[in-house]
Image (cartoon, rainbow over all chains, first blue to last red; front, top):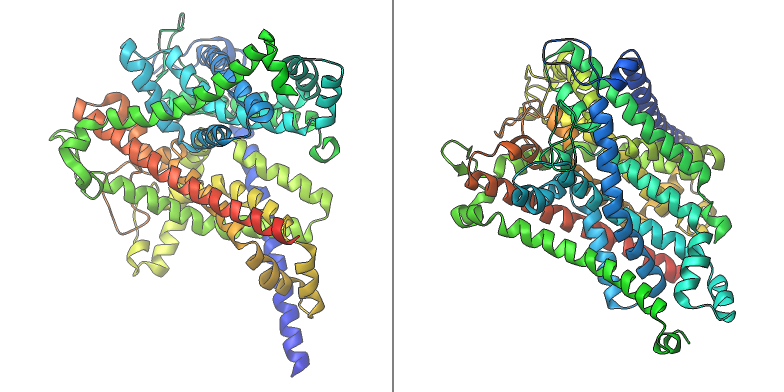
Length: 282
Length: 312
Protein backbone atom coordinates (compact mmCIF):
# COMPACT_ATOMS: atom_id res chain seq x y z
CA UNK A 1 0.00 0.00 0.00
CA UNK A 2 2.66 2.43 1.02
CA UNK A 3 4.82 1.53 -1.93
CA UNK A 4 1.78 1.92 -4.20
CA UNK A 5 1.24 5.50 -3.14
CA UNK A 6 4.94 6.15 -3.54
CA UNK A 7 4.83 4.78 -7.09
CA UNK A 8 1.87 7.01 -7.85
CA UNK A 9 3.64 10.05 -6.43
CA UNK A 10 6.73 9.26 -8.46
CA UNK A 11 4.59 9.04 -11.58
CA UNK A 12 2.83 12.32 -10.87
CA UNK A 13 6.24 13.86 -10.28
CA UNK A 14 7.60 12.59 -13.57
CA UNK A 15 4.52 13.55 -15.61
CA UNK A 16 4.23 17.04 -14.12
CA UNK A 17 7.89 17.86 -14.60
CA UNK A 18 7.81 16.52 -18.15
CA UNK A 19 4.83 18.74 -18.85
CA UNK A 20 6.75 21.83 -17.74
CA UNK A 21 9.51 20.82 -20.13
CA UNK A 22 6.92 20.45 -22.85
CA UNK A 23 5.65 23.97 -22.13
CA UNK A 24 9.15 25.36 -22.57
CA UNK A 25 9.54 23.37 -25.77
CA UNK A 26 6.25 24.72 -27.18
CA UNK A 27 7.17 28.31 -26.30
CA UNK A 28 10.62 28.12 -27.86
CA UNK A 29 9.37 26.26 -30.95
CA UNK A 30 6.80 28.98 -31.50
CA UNK A 31 9.61 31.50 -31.70
CA UNK A 32 11.60 29.39 -34.15
CA UNK A 33 8.49 28.73 -36.20
CA UNK A 34 7.82 32.48 -36.43
CA UNK A 35 11.41 33.30 -37.36
CA UNK A 36 11.57 30.51 -39.92
CA UNK A 37 8.20 31.20 -41.49
CA UNK A 38 8.85 34.92 -41.88
CA UNK A 39 12.32 34.30 -43.30
CA UNK A 40 11.04 31.74 -45.81
CA UNK A 41 8.23 33.98 -46.99
CA UNK A 42 10.15 37.22 -46.91
CA UNK A 43 13.49 36.26 -48.39
CA UNK A 44 12.12 35.71 -51.89
CA UNK A 45 10.58 39.15 -52.10
CA UNK A 46 13.58 41.11 -50.89
CA UNK A 47 15.62 42.48 -53.74
CA UNK A 48 17.20 45.73 -54.85
CA UNK A 49 13.91 46.93 -56.30
CA UNK A 50 12.10 46.38 -52.99
CA UNK A 51 14.66 48.48 -51.12
CA UNK A 52 15.03 51.33 -53.62
CA UNK A 53 11.75 51.84 -55.49
CA UNK A 54 8.47 53.52 -54.66
CA UNK A 55 5.30 51.42 -54.49
CA UNK A 56 3.74 50.84 -57.90
CA UNK A 57 0.13 51.91 -58.51
CA UNK A 58 -2.56 49.42 -57.51
CA UNK A 59 -2.70 46.53 -59.94
CA UNK A 60 0.86 46.69 -61.21
CA UNK A 61 3.30 44.20 -59.78
CA UNK A 62 6.76 45.12 -58.58
CA UNK A 63 7.82 48.32 -56.93
CA UNK A 64 9.22 48.59 -53.44
CA UNK A 65 9.09 50.31 -50.12
CA UNK A 66 11.93 52.82 -50.28
CA UNK A 67 9.64 55.57 -49.00
CA UNK A 68 8.52 53.41 -46.07
CA UNK A 69 12.11 52.65 -45.10
CA UNK A 70 13.05 56.34 -45.20
CA UNK A 71 9.77 57.18 -43.44
CA UNK A 72 10.52 54.77 -40.59
CA UNK A 73 14.02 56.24 -40.27
CA UNK A 74 12.65 59.78 -40.11
CA UNK A 75 9.99 58.79 -37.58
CA UNK A 76 12.57 57.05 -35.39
CA UNK A 77 14.94 60.01 -35.60
CA UNK A 78 12.23 62.41 -34.53
CA UNK A 79 11.03 60.02 -31.81
CA UNK A 80 14.55 59.85 -30.35
CA UNK A 81 14.83 63.64 -30.38
CA UNK A 82 11.67 63.81 -28.27
CA UNK A 83 11.83 60.66 -26.18
CA UNK A 84 15.52 60.30 -25.37
CA UNK A 85 16.20 63.69 -23.71
CA UNK A 86 13.03 63.55 -21.63
CA UNK A 87 13.61 59.95 -20.61
CA UNK A 88 17.34 60.41 -20.07
CA UNK A 89 17.08 63.51 -17.86
CA UNK A 90 14.05 62.06 -16.11
CA UNK A 91 16.15 58.99 -15.30
CA UNK A 92 19.05 61.15 -14.11
CA UNK A 93 16.66 62.99 -11.84
CA UNK A 94 15.36 59.76 -10.34
CA UNK A 95 18.78 58.24 -9.78
CA UNK A 96 20.81 61.31 -8.75
CA UNK A 97 18.34 63.73 -7.18
CA UNK A 98 14.97 62.15 -6.54
CA UNK A 99 14.31 60.54 -3.21
CA UNK A 100 11.11 62.08 -1.95
CA UNK A 101 7.47 62.13 -2.83
CA UNK A 102 8.03 63.87 -6.18
CA UNK A 103 10.32 61.04 -7.30
CA UNK A 104 7.60 58.55 -6.40
CA UNK A 105 5.09 60.39 -8.59
CA UNK A 106 7.51 60.75 -11.49
CA UNK A 107 8.27 57.03 -11.34
CA UNK A 108 4.56 56.32 -11.13
CA UNK A 109 3.75 58.57 -14.11
CA UNK A 110 6.45 56.86 -16.14
CA UNK A 111 4.98 53.46 -15.24
CA UNK A 112 1.51 54.65 -16.23
CA UNK A 113 2.89 55.89 -19.55
CA UNK A 114 4.50 52.49 -20.08
CA UNK A 115 1.16 50.78 -19.51
CA UNK A 116 -0.89 53.00 -21.81
CA UNK A 117 -1.98 51.00 -24.87
CA UNK A 118 -0.11 52.25 -27.94
CA UNK A 119 -3.32 53.07 -29.77
CA UNK A 120 -4.26 55.49 -26.96
CA UNK A 121 -0.91 57.24 -27.42
CA UNK A 122 -1.99 57.59 -31.05
CA UNK A 123 -5.20 59.34 -29.96
CA UNK A 124 -3.12 61.65 -27.78
CA UNK A 125 -0.88 62.65 -30.68
CA UNK A 126 -3.94 63.04 -32.90
CA UNK A 127 -5.54 65.48 -30.45
CA UNK A 128 -2.35 67.42 -29.72
CA UNK A 129 -0.84 67.61 -33.21
CA UNK A 130 -3.08 66.36 -36.01
CA UNK A 131 -6.15 68.38 -34.99
CA UNK A 132 -4.41 71.77 -34.50
CA UNK A 133 -2.28 71.31 -37.65
CA UNK A 134 -5.29 70.06 -39.60
CA UNK A 135 -3.44 67.20 -41.19
CA UNK A 136 -1.60 63.92 -40.73
CA UNK A 137 2.17 64.34 -40.59
CA UNK A 138 5.55 62.80 -39.90
CA UNK A 139 5.70 65.20 -36.97
CA UNK A 140 2.61 63.69 -35.32
CA UNK A 141 3.86 60.13 -35.86
CA UNK A 142 7.30 60.95 -34.47
CA UNK A 143 5.72 62.64 -31.47
CA UNK A 144 3.60 59.55 -30.73
CA UNK A 145 6.62 57.23 -30.96
CA UNK A 146 8.69 59.68 -28.89
CA UNK A 147 6.14 59.56 -26.07
CA UNK A 148 6.28 55.77 -26.22
CA UNK A 149 10.08 55.84 -25.82
CA UNK A 150 10.04 57.89 -22.60
CA UNK A 151 9.17 55.26 -19.97
CA UNK A 152 11.78 52.71 -21.08
CA UNK A 153 14.42 55.44 -21.43
CA UNK A 154 13.62 56.61 -17.88
CA UNK A 155 13.83 53.11 -16.47
CA UNK A 156 17.04 52.04 -18.19
CA UNK A 157 18.77 55.32 -17.39
CA UNK A 158 17.82 55.09 -13.72
CA UNK A 159 18.80 51.42 -13.51
CA UNK A 160 22.19 51.80 -15.13
CA UNK A 161 23.12 54.95 -13.22
CA UNK A 162 22.23 53.21 -9.97
CA UNK A 163 24.58 50.38 -10.85
CA UNK A 164 27.50 52.79 -10.48
CA UNK A 165 28.60 52.42 -6.86
CA UNK A 166 28.36 55.38 -4.48
CA UNK A 167 32.11 55.11 -3.88
CA UNK A 168 32.76 56.28 -7.45
CA UNK A 169 30.69 59.40 -6.87
CA UNK A 170 32.28 59.99 -3.48
CA UNK A 171 35.77 59.66 -4.92
CA UNK A 172 34.90 62.38 -7.38
CA UNK A 173 33.38 64.65 -4.70
CA UNK A 174 36.46 64.12 -2.57
CA UNK A 175 38.55 65.58 -5.36
CA UNK A 176 36.37 68.67 -5.19
CA UNK A 177 34.42 67.98 -8.36
CA UNK A 178 30.95 69.49 -8.47
CA UNK A 179 27.93 67.23 -8.50
CA UNK A 180 26.88 68.00 -12.07
CA UNK A 181 30.41 67.46 -13.34
CA UNK A 182 30.58 64.21 -11.41
CA UNK A 183 27.35 63.07 -13.05
CA UNK A 184 28.33 64.17 -16.55
CA UNK A 185 32.01 63.22 -16.61
CA UNK A 186 32.22 60.32 -14.15
CA UNK A 187 28.91 58.56 -13.62
CA UNK A 188 27.43 58.75 -17.13
CA UNK A 189 30.64 57.64 -18.92
CA UNK A 190 30.93 54.72 -16.50
CA UNK A 191 27.39 53.66 -17.40
CA UNK A 192 27.64 54.64 -21.07
CA UNK A 193 27.52 51.17 -22.55
CA UNK A 194 24.38 50.24 -20.66
CA UNK A 195 22.75 53.56 -21.50
CA UNK A 196 23.49 53.23 -25.22
CA UNK A 197 22.12 49.70 -25.46
CA UNK A 198 19.09 50.72 -23.41
CA UNK A 199 18.30 53.46 -25.90
CA UNK A 200 18.87 51.09 -28.83
CA UNK A 201 16.48 48.52 -27.35
CA UNK A 202 13.97 51.29 -26.81
CA UNK A 203 14.27 52.29 -30.48
CA UNK A 204 13.88 48.70 -31.63
CA UNK A 205 10.72 48.45 -29.59
CA UNK A 206 9.02 51.50 -31.11
CA UNK A 207 10.35 50.71 -34.60
CA UNK A 208 7.70 48.03 -34.90
CA UNK A 209 4.84 50.07 -33.47
CA UNK A 210 1.97 50.39 -35.90
CA UNK A 211 -1.06 51.42 -33.89
CA UNK A 212 0.11 54.93 -32.92
CA UNK A 213 1.00 55.70 -36.55
CA UNK A 214 -2.34 54.74 -38.11
CA UNK A 215 -3.92 58.13 -37.59
CA UNK A 216 -0.88 60.31 -36.99
CA UNK A 217 1.63 59.60 -39.77
CA UNK A 218 -1.06 57.80 -41.79
CA UNK A 219 0.50 56.40 -44.97
CA UNK A 220 1.78 57.68 -48.28
CA UNK A 221 2.46 56.01 -51.58
CA UNK A 222 4.95 58.65 -52.69
CA UNK A 223 7.88 60.41 -51.04
CA UNK A 224 6.99 62.49 -48.03
CA UNK A 225 8.78 65.84 -48.03
CA UNK A 226 9.62 67.72 -44.86
CA UNK A 227 7.86 66.98 -41.62
CA UNK A 228 4.29 68.11 -42.21
CA UNK A 229 3.20 65.60 -44.83
CA UNK A 230 1.78 62.14 -44.15
CA UNK A 231 4.46 59.51 -44.41
CA UNK A 232 4.67 55.84 -45.05
CA UNK A 233 6.41 53.53 -42.58
CA UNK A 234 7.33 49.85 -42.61
CA UNK A 235 4.87 48.67 -39.93
CA UNK A 236 1.92 50.52 -41.46
CA UNK A 237 2.88 49.20 -44.91
CA UNK A 238 2.88 45.64 -43.54
CA UNK A 239 -0.59 46.21 -42.15
CA UNK A 240 -2.01 47.85 -45.29
CA UNK A 241 -0.49 45.28 -47.62
CA UNK A 242 -1.46 42.32 -45.44
CA UNK A 243 -5.16 43.16 -45.38
CA UNK A 244 -5.21 44.03 -49.10
CA UNK A 245 -6.53 41.47 -51.61
CA UNK A 246 -3.43 41.52 -53.85
CA UNK A 247 -1.04 38.60 -54.01
CA UNK A 248 1.93 40.81 -54.87
CA UNK A 249 1.24 43.07 -51.89
CA UNK A 250 1.16 40.08 -49.55
CA UNK A 251 4.59 39.09 -50.88
CA UNK A 252 5.92 42.56 -50.12
CA UNK A 253 4.31 42.54 -46.67
CA UNK A 254 6.37 39.45 -45.84
CA UNK A 255 9.50 41.13 -47.15
CA UNK A 256 8.85 44.20 -45.00
CA UNK A 257 8.16 41.95 -42.01
CA UNK A 258 11.52 40.25 -42.55
CA UNK A 259 13.34 43.60 -42.71
CA UNK A 260 11.62 44.79 -39.53
CA UNK A 261 12.23 41.52 -37.73
CA UNK A 262 15.92 41.49 -38.64
CA UNK A 263 16.24 45.01 -37.25
CA UNK A 264 14.64 43.94 -33.97
CA UNK A 265 16.68 40.73 -33.73
CA UNK A 266 20.00 42.41 -34.50
CA UNK A 267 19.44 45.10 -31.88
CA UNK A 268 18.27 42.62 -29.25
CA UNK A 269 21.08 40.18 -29.95
CA UNK A 270 23.62 43.00 -29.98
CA UNK A 271 22.31 44.34 -26.70
CA UNK A 272 22.76 40.94 -25.13
CA UNK A 273 26.41 40.85 -26.13
CA UNK A 274 27.12 44.48 -25.21
CA UNK A 275 25.19 44.78 -21.96
CA UNK A 276 27.32 44.53 -18.86
CA UNK A 277 26.19 41.63 -16.73
CA UNK A 278 24.27 43.06 -13.82
CA UNK A 279 25.82 40.86 -11.17
CA UNK A 280 29.37 41.65 -12.20
CA UNK A 281 28.96 45.40 -12.16
CA UNK A 282 26.89 45.67 -9.00
CA UNK B 1 27.76 68.55 1.78
CA UNK B 2 25.94 68.67 -1.50
CA UNK B 3 23.60 71.39 -0.29
CA UNK B 4 26.52 73.63 0.65
CA UNK B 5 27.80 73.24 -2.89
CA UNK B 6 24.57 74.38 -4.43
CA UNK B 7 24.23 77.19 -1.90
CA UNK B 8 27.62 78.44 -2.94
CA UNK B 9 25.83 79.36 -6.12
CA UNK B 10 27.36 77.09 -8.70
CA UNK B 11 25.42 77.75 -11.87
CA UNK B 12 26.38 74.38 -13.32
CA UNK B 13 24.87 72.41 -10.47
CA UNK B 14 21.75 74.52 -10.48
CA UNK B 15 21.32 74.35 -14.24
CA UNK B 16 21.88 70.60 -14.43
CA UNK B 17 19.69 69.82 -11.42
CA UNK B 18 17.04 72.16 -12.76
CA UNK B 19 17.11 70.51 -16.19
CA UNK B 20 16.69 67.02 -14.73
CA UNK B 21 13.90 68.24 -12.49
CA UNK B 22 12.25 69.99 -15.44
CA UNK B 23 12.27 66.90 -17.64
CA UNK B 24 11.03 64.78 -14.74
CA UNK B 25 8.16 67.19 -14.20
CA UNK B 26 7.48 67.14 -17.93
CA UNK B 27 6.68 63.42 -17.66
CA UNK B 28 4.14 64.16 -14.92
CA UNK B 29 2.64 66.94 -17.03
CA UNK B 30 2.43 64.68 -20.08
CA UNK B 31 0.41 62.07 -18.22
CA UNK B 32 -1.88 64.73 -16.75
CA UNK B 33 -2.43 66.28 -20.20
CA UNK B 34 -3.06 62.84 -21.67
CA UNK B 35 -5.84 62.12 -19.18
CA UNK B 36 -7.28 65.63 -19.48
CA UNK B 37 -7.31 65.62 -23.28
CA UNK B 38 -8.93 62.19 -23.47
CA UNK B 39 -11.71 63.28 -21.13
CA UNK B 40 -12.19 66.69 -22.77
CA UNK B 41 -12.26 65.32 -26.32
CA UNK B 42 -14.83 62.69 -25.49
CA UNK B 43 -17.18 65.23 -23.86
CA UNK B 44 -19.84 65.08 -26.62
CA UNK B 45 -20.19 61.33 -26.21
CA UNK B 46 -20.00 61.52 -22.42
CA UNK B 47 -22.82 64.06 -22.44
CA UNK B 48 -24.94 62.31 -25.07
CA UNK B 49 -24.86 58.78 -23.71
CA UNK B 50 -23.74 59.05 -20.08
CA UNK B 51 -22.81 55.80 -18.35
CA UNK B 52 -25.18 53.84 -20.64
CA UNK B 53 -22.35 54.05 -23.20
CA UNK B 54 -20.76 51.16 -21.34
CA UNK B 55 -23.68 48.75 -21.62
CA UNK B 56 -25.42 49.79 -24.80
CA UNK B 57 -25.01 47.39 -27.69
CA UNK B 58 -25.72 49.72 -30.60
CA UNK B 59 -22.82 50.93 -32.67
CA UNK B 60 -24.31 52.75 -35.63
CA UNK B 61 -22.32 55.70 -37.01
CA UNK B 62 -25.08 56.42 -39.55
CA UNK B 63 -27.76 56.99 -36.93
CA UNK B 64 -25.17 58.38 -34.51
CA UNK B 65 -25.95 55.79 -31.87
CA UNK B 66 -22.90 54.65 -29.97
CA UNK B 67 -22.55 51.98 -27.30
CA UNK B 68 -19.33 50.27 -26.35
CA UNK B 69 -20.55 46.91 -25.03
CA UNK B 70 -19.64 44.78 -28.10
CA UNK B 71 -16.09 46.14 -27.94
CA UNK B 72 -15.77 45.72 -24.19
CA UNK B 73 -17.07 42.16 -24.52
CA UNK B 74 -14.66 41.41 -27.38
CA UNK B 75 -11.70 42.84 -25.48
CA UNK B 76 -12.50 40.81 -22.36
CA UNK B 77 -13.32 37.61 -24.26
CA UNK B 78 -10.12 37.64 -26.33
CA UNK B 79 -8.06 38.40 -23.21
CA UNK B 80 -9.68 35.55 -21.26
CA UNK B 81 -9.02 33.06 -24.08
CA UNK B 82 -5.44 34.33 -24.24
CA UNK B 83 -4.96 33.94 -20.48
CA UNK B 84 -6.44 30.42 -20.44
CA UNK B 85 -3.81 29.36 -22.98
CA UNK B 86 -0.87 31.42 -21.79
CA UNK B 87 -1.08 30.90 -18.02
CA UNK B 88 -0.33 27.14 -18.12
CA UNK B 89 2.15 27.59 -20.95
CA UNK B 90 3.96 30.55 -19.41
CA UNK B 91 3.97 29.24 -15.86
CA UNK B 92 5.03 25.76 -16.99
CA UNK B 93 7.93 27.28 -18.90
CA UNK B 94 8.93 29.38 -15.88
CA UNK B 95 8.89 26.32 -13.59
CA UNK B 96 11.00 24.39 -16.09
CA UNK B 97 13.52 27.23 -16.29
CA UNK B 98 13.87 27.56 -12.53
CA UNK B 99 13.60 23.93 -11.43
CA UNK B 100 14.92 21.70 -14.18
CA UNK B 101 17.00 23.50 -16.76
CA UNK B 102 20.75 23.80 -16.16
CA UNK B 103 21.74 27.47 -15.68
CA UNK B 104 23.13 27.98 -19.15
CA UNK B 105 20.13 26.41 -20.88
CA UNK B 106 17.85 28.43 -18.64
CA UNK B 107 19.62 31.68 -19.61
CA UNK B 108 19.38 30.88 -23.31
CA UNK B 109 15.71 29.94 -23.20
CA UNK B 110 14.89 33.05 -21.17
CA UNK B 111 16.55 35.15 -23.86
CA UNK B 112 14.56 33.40 -26.59
CA UNK B 113 11.33 33.92 -24.67
CA UNK B 114 12.15 37.61 -24.34
CA UNK B 115 12.69 37.76 -28.10
CA UNK B 116 9.13 36.56 -28.51
CA UNK B 117 8.06 39.77 -26.76
CA UNK B 118 10.29 41.89 -29.00
CA UNK B 119 8.64 40.82 -32.26
CA UNK B 120 6.40 43.69 -33.43
CA UNK B 121 2.68 43.08 -33.07
CA UNK B 122 1.95 43.75 -36.73
CA UNK B 123 4.15 40.76 -37.58
CA UNK B 124 2.08 38.61 -35.23
CA UNK B 125 -0.95 39.89 -37.08
CA UNK B 126 0.58 38.98 -40.44
CA UNK B 127 1.36 35.43 -39.35
CA UNK B 128 -2.05 35.22 -37.68
CA UNK B 129 -3.82 36.28 -40.85
CA UNK B 130 -2.01 33.89 -43.19
CA UNK B 131 -1.30 30.93 -40.92
CA UNK B 132 -3.57 30.80 -37.87
CA UNK B 133 -6.78 31.99 -39.55
CA UNK B 134 -6.71 29.29 -42.29
CA UNK B 135 -5.78 26.68 -39.68
CA UNK B 136 -8.71 27.60 -37.43
CA UNK B 137 -11.08 27.73 -40.43
CA UNK B 138 -10.14 24.43 -42.03
CA UNK B 139 -8.85 22.29 -39.18
CA UNK B 140 -9.39 23.48 -35.65
CA UNK B 141 -12.91 24.90 -35.67
CA UNK B 142 -14.51 22.02 -37.65
CA UNK B 143 -13.01 19.34 -35.43
CA UNK B 144 -13.72 21.13 -32.14
CA UNK B 145 -17.31 22.00 -33.01
CA UNK B 146 -17.91 18.47 -34.31
CA UNK B 147 -17.10 17.18 -30.84
CA UNK B 148 -18.21 20.05 -28.60
CA UNK B 149 -20.57 22.00 -30.87
CA UNK B 150 -23.49 21.44 -28.45
CA UNK B 151 -21.82 23.91 -26.08
CA UNK B 152 -22.77 27.39 -27.33
CA UNK B 153 -19.25 28.84 -27.17
CA UNK B 154 -17.94 26.11 -29.50
CA UNK B 155 -20.61 26.40 -32.18
CA UNK B 156 -19.22 26.09 -35.69
CA UNK B 157 -18.56 29.14 -37.80
CA UNK B 158 -17.16 29.30 -41.34
CA UNK B 159 -14.98 32.39 -40.97
CA UNK B 160 -11.70 31.49 -39.29
CA UNK B 161 -11.37 35.05 -38.03
CA UNK B 162 -12.91 35.69 -34.63
CA UNK B 163 -12.52 35.87 -30.86
CA UNK B 164 -10.77 32.53 -30.53
CA UNK B 165 -8.21 33.20 -33.27
CA UNK B 166 -7.39 36.57 -31.72
CA UNK B 167 -7.05 34.81 -28.35
CA UNK B 168 -4.47 32.35 -29.71
CA UNK B 169 -2.32 35.13 -31.16
CA UNK B 170 -2.60 37.17 -27.97
CA UNK B 171 -1.62 34.11 -25.93
CA UNK B 172 1.70 33.79 -27.79
CA UNK B 173 2.28 37.52 -27.40
CA UNK B 174 1.78 37.55 -23.62
CA UNK B 175 3.49 34.28 -22.68
CA UNK B 176 6.86 36.12 -22.40
CA UNK B 177 5.43 38.46 -19.77
CA UNK B 178 4.15 35.59 -17.62
CA UNK B 179 7.32 33.53 -18.05
CA UNK B 180 9.84 36.32 -17.49
CA UNK B 181 8.20 37.79 -14.39
CA UNK B 182 7.19 34.43 -12.89
CA UNK B 183 10.72 33.14 -13.36
CA UNK B 184 12.11 36.05 -11.38
CA UNK B 185 9.47 35.55 -8.72
CA UNK B 186 10.20 31.82 -8.42
CA UNK B 187 13.92 32.56 -8.12
CA UNK B 188 13.13 34.77 -5.12
CA UNK B 189 11.61 31.90 -3.10
CA UNK B 190 14.03 31.28 -0.23
CA UNK B 191 16.06 28.10 -0.16
CA UNK B 192 14.68 27.21 3.25
CA UNK B 193 11.20 26.74 1.77
CA UNK B 194 12.50 24.19 -0.71
CA UNK B 195 14.60 22.36 1.81
CA UNK B 196 11.75 22.18 4.32
CA UNK B 197 9.47 20.52 1.76
CA UNK B 198 12.16 18.10 0.61
CA UNK B 199 13.06 17.23 4.21
CA UNK B 200 9.44 16.20 4.76
CA UNK B 201 9.83 13.67 1.95
CA UNK B 202 8.14 15.59 -0.85
CA UNK B 203 8.96 14.66 -4.42
CA UNK B 204 10.36 17.39 -6.65
CA UNK B 205 6.92 18.21 -8.07
CA UNK B 206 5.30 18.15 -4.60
CA UNK B 207 7.91 20.62 -3.46
CA UNK B 208 7.02 22.88 -6.38
CA UNK B 209 3.27 22.59 -5.92
CA UNK B 210 3.06 22.70 -2.13
CA UNK B 211 5.96 24.96 -1.13
CA UNK B 212 7.13 27.09 -4.03
CA UNK B 213 3.97 28.01 -5.92
CA UNK B 214 1.96 29.01 -2.83
CA UNK B 215 4.87 31.11 -1.61
CA UNK B 216 5.15 32.86 -4.96
CA UNK B 217 1.44 33.14 -5.71
CA UNK B 218 1.04 36.89 -5.35
CA UNK B 219 4.01 37.45 -7.64
CA UNK B 220 2.65 34.98 -10.17
CA UNK B 221 -0.72 36.71 -10.00
CA UNK B 222 1.16 39.96 -10.60
CA UNK B 223 2.77 38.55 -13.73
CA UNK B 224 -0.65 37.43 -14.97
CA UNK B 225 -2.13 40.89 -14.46
CA UNK B 226 0.82 42.43 -16.32
CA UNK B 227 0.14 40.08 -19.20
CA UNK B 228 -3.58 40.84 -19.03
CA UNK B 229 -2.91 44.56 -19.32
CA UNK B 230 -0.87 43.88 -22.46
CA UNK B 231 -3.62 41.72 -23.94
CA UNK B 232 -6.33 44.30 -23.26
CA UNK B 233 -4.47 47.07 -25.06
CA UNK B 234 -3.03 45.04 -27.92
CA UNK B 235 -4.15 46.52 -31.22
CA UNK B 236 -2.64 45.41 -34.50
CA UNK B 237 -2.48 41.65 -34.18
CA UNK B 238 -6.06 41.56 -32.91
CA UNK B 239 -7.40 43.98 -35.51
CA UNK B 240 -6.09 41.76 -38.29
CA UNK B 241 -7.72 38.52 -37.11
CA UNK B 242 -10.79 39.46 -35.04
CA UNK B 243 -13.19 39.89 -37.95
CA UNK B 244 -14.28 43.43 -37.05
CA UNK B 245 -18.00 42.89 -36.44
CA UNK B 246 -19.53 44.87 -33.56
CA UNK B 247 -21.88 42.14 -32.36
CA UNK B 248 -21.91 39.84 -29.37
CA UNK B 249 -22.25 36.19 -30.36
CA UNK B 250 -22.15 33.15 -28.12
CA UNK B 251 -19.61 31.22 -30.20
CA UNK B 252 -15.94 32.02 -29.77
CA UNK B 253 -15.39 31.18 -33.42
CA UNK B 254 -17.61 34.05 -34.58
CA UNK B 255 -16.11 37.38 -35.58
CA UNK B 256 -16.09 40.09 -32.92
CA UNK B 257 -14.48 43.43 -32.29
CA UNK B 258 -12.28 44.90 -29.57
CA UNK B 259 -11.88 48.43 -28.21
CA UNK B 260 -8.39 48.82 -29.63
CA UNK B 261 -9.45 47.36 -32.99
CA UNK B 262 -12.37 49.74 -33.49
CA UNK B 263 -10.04 52.65 -32.77
CA UNK B 264 -7.56 51.36 -35.35
CA UNK B 265 -10.25 50.93 -37.99
CA UNK B 266 -12.60 53.85 -37.56
CA UNK B 267 -10.57 56.66 -36.04
CA UNK B 268 -9.13 58.24 -39.17
CA UNK B 269 -12.47 57.93 -40.94
CA UNK B 270 -14.79 59.15 -38.20
CA UNK B 271 -17.87 60.58 -39.90
CA UNK B 272 -18.94 63.15 -37.33
CA UNK B 273 -17.75 64.90 -34.20
CA UNK B 274 -19.95 62.68 -32.08
CA UNK B 275 -18.47 59.59 -33.73
CA UNK B 276 -14.94 60.87 -33.03
CA UNK B 277 -15.81 61.66 -29.42
CA UNK B 278 -17.39 58.23 -28.95
CA UNK B 279 -14.18 56.64 -30.25
CA UNK B 280 -12.06 58.78 -27.92
CA UNK B 281 -14.32 57.75 -25.05
CA UNK B 282 -13.55 54.12 -25.93
CA UNK B 283 -9.88 55.09 -25.75
CA UNK B 284 -10.53 56.62 -22.34
CA UNK B 285 -12.26 53.47 -21.08
CA UNK B 286 -9.40 51.34 -22.41
CA UNK B 287 -6.89 53.65 -20.72
CA UNK B 288 -8.67 53.45 -17.36
CA UNK B 289 -8.98 49.65 -17.49
CA UNK B 290 -5.32 49.09 -18.35
CA UNK B 291 -4.17 51.53 -15.66
CA UNK B 292 -6.22 49.66 -13.06
CA UNK B 293 -4.95 46.24 -14.17
CA UNK B 294 -1.35 47.50 -14.30
CA UNK B 295 -1.78 49.04 -10.85
CA UNK B 296 -3.04 45.74 -9.43
CA UNK B 297 -0.08 43.94 -10.99
CA UNK B 298 2.36 46.34 -9.38
CA UNK B 299 0.68 46.05 -5.99
CA UNK B 300 0.85 42.25 -6.12
CA UNK B 301 4.52 42.29 -7.12
CA UNK B 302 5.29 44.84 -4.43
CA UNK B 303 3.58 42.68 -1.81
CA UNK B 304 5.76 39.73 -2.76
CA UNK B 305 8.88 41.91 -2.60
CA UNK B 306 8.00 42.85 0.98
CA UNK B 307 7.35 39.30 2.20
CA UNK B 308 10.64 37.99 0.82
CA UNK B 309 12.56 40.92 2.23
CA UNK B 310 11.03 40.32 5.64
CA UNK B 311 11.77 36.62 5.75
CA UNK B 312 15.02 35.90 4.02
